[in-house]
Image (tube, rainbow, N blue to C red):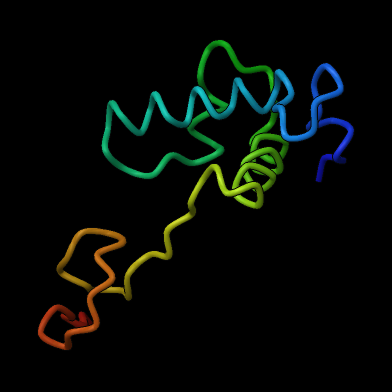
Length: 97
């Protein structure tokens, strides 16, 4: 996890580091293009990134802790709704065996 000093830029608390800005920009851009969640592995495969997926995951966690990203909880296996639907209706669930 990065320290608070890494997350500061120009001495301003709360300002994002260049690394965090780059990850955030890529996550938002990919989300807007696809409409689905963006993994650290996906970001690490982009041509402009020279970071491992683990390093990107760490930055994404920092962004989530800062309230800038949200990591949805996947629905139960077999849920017929889209990921993150949040429904609790048993009619939505279809258990496959």
